[in-house]
Image 1 (cartoon, one colour):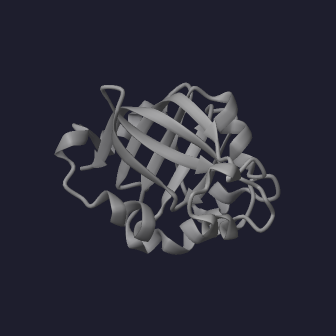
Image 2 (cartoon, one colour; image 1 turned 120 degrees about the horizontal axis):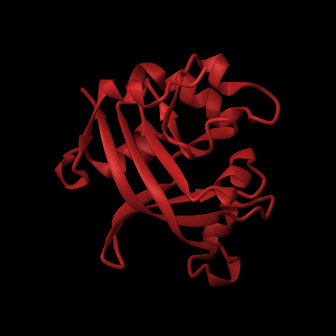
Image 3 (spheres, helix red, strand yellow; image 1 turned 45 degrees about the horizontal axis):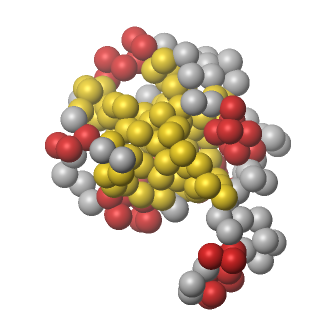
Amino acid sequence: MISEKSGLTKFVETDILSIENNVFKWVEKEWMLITAGTGENFNTMTANWGGFGYLWKKNVCFIFVRPTRYTYQFTEESNFFTLSFFEEKYRDALNYCGTYSGRDVNKIEKCGFTPLQIESDVISFEEAKLIITARKIYYQDINPLNFIDTGIDKNYPKKDYHRMYIGEIIKAYSKQ
């Protein structure tokens, strides 16, 4: 069952510039869930490739999703996605969401997450400590011909190169 906006009472809207955590640690060490879709149909996946910055006069985040991932179709079809960050006690659940496909199992149920519908096409989870909502503004497929460091291609033994999405950060919510 999806919590609607009333579940947001556990969160406070946060100015993205006031967040003092180390974004490199967030993405690489703590991981994040990328979620896209609608309240009726969505998927999530664990990621530790991505980042944050300032581009085109906008605060942005960028994510990478392989076309073979189930979340890819949701990210393609959605105008928005969320990045959700969790406390360490959710590490096993994040590992599960990165290991199993939503095509095959109900990851949300298995992990005990409570989906939170922020807007009609913006979904996250009540258990998150930080939620970043983003509107897609650009995408680009990774082209191996552009690898200056040719060793990067070793990350792609199946040649399933990621699609990079840049999202304008619309809102951030932190747990109260």
